[in-house]
Image (cartoon, rainbow, N blue to C red; front, side):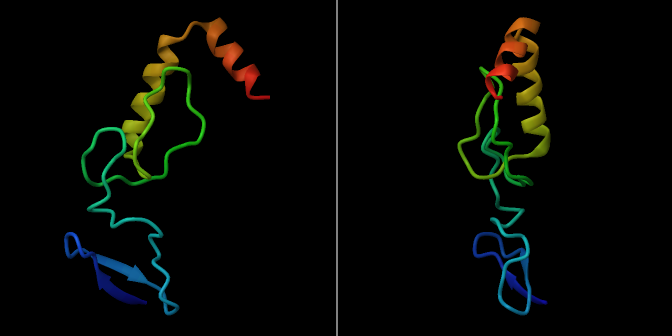
Length: 90
């Protein structure tokens, strides 16, 4: 493995012997969360969102932010609304 450094923060990024970035995304320190706008985003957001769920405006999110956004939207829907949405996915 080779170590290079992020151009934004100088944190190490790991590359395999073929030059492929093993993180396959932005530097984990510089990666800005598409939900809260803070650095350190650690995952790609899920592709399906509850009606009314906040949607990220960047490629990565914090897992905790995504969990909170999902929970808020889920909690705001009635049982019938949740069931109707889930049936629409089939």
